[in-house]
Image 1 (cartoon, rainbow, N blue to C red):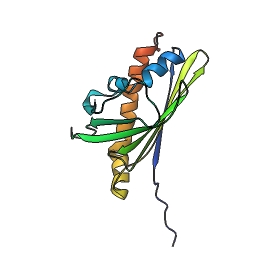
Image 2: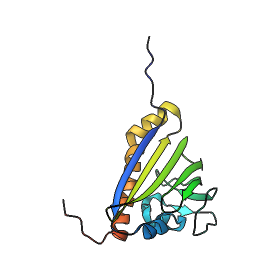
Image 3: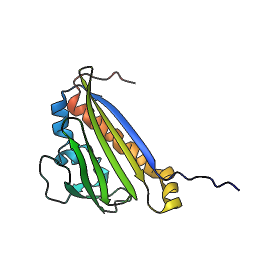
Image 4: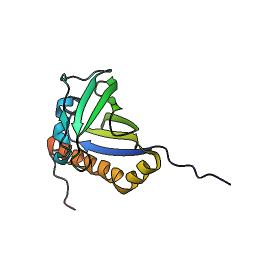
Length: 164
């Protein structure tokens, strides 16, 4: 009897090119104070901790967020790695996921800034969490990052994208 191996975690990647300089994109993206600007309003996102403008390894950021049914949850992340103008990583310490590891990568490519987000996550509650991921969590994460992509485009891109 062979056992089917269940997927223990999931990964989502978003790549975007911005018509800006690395310093401007980094200054905006690495400031926790700008998170609310790139998070959909329906998430009721609110930073609850005292924060500085500049992030650093070991920085703890507390939020309230309402990912489903407007039920507010506390979420605490730690900035674990920062290399200025290159990348930073945040990891959930307290929150709705069994695992949340988010890499924010920045690089200059052909006079644009390539911004890559890689989120590795594991829903809570084992099989039920994996089912919830299939039913709505994965779609919601994609929706949040699509909102973020549009906001970053509005902030940093001067050229209009062709209409679809």
